[in-house]
Image 1 (cartoon, rainbow, N blue to C red):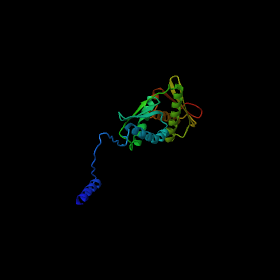
Image 2 (tube, one colour; image 1 turned 90 degrees about the vertical axis):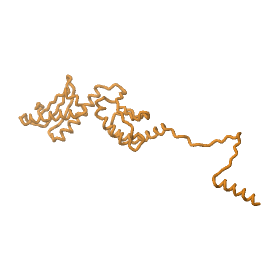
Image 3 (cartoon, rainbow, N blue to C red; image 1 turned 45 degrees about the vertical axis):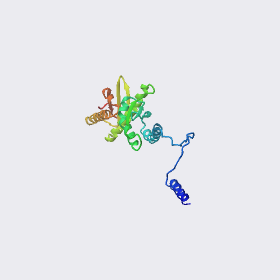
Image 4 (tube, rainbow, N blue to C red; image 1 turned 135 degrees about the horizontal axis):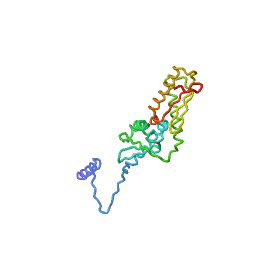
Length: 220
């Protein structure tokens, strides 16, 4: 009887103490269900999609001419293709990189380099580019002159003629006095400063400024 009790005690000890005695049958195969290993590339793709959702409204707000935005996990690099001239890229690259860098700080891409490059999808229309330039410069000149309190400015016209870029400024100035002539020259100087600080500063070499009084007489 004592032997039986001892045997049962040993069996219980083996079971509940965590030790198992197992006799392996050579004809039996045991399969274990295992969790599949995560795919690193899929994780990056999913995270990049989330990053794009954060970036999209910020980039659209700035109206950047971005056509592609991708990443390269081997080079640890985010690439942004811009459908615009190199001058445009030089002007906007810093702002684009800043937005992407700030948005990626809490993501897997926080240490990725950022590359902005020129990607022309179609041949630009020279006439369309000129109109776009003129509209941009007109707005820039108006804002800069208004900030300097040149309240006599009534209108600004920009046009290309004979390989020159003409900027024609109509004012409410009434008489052609020495004071008004000097005022006209000041306005011309402000236009040149504004152009120098703009995206289109290379146009300065072919710029000609005409400042007119209310009788359309040139006063600069």
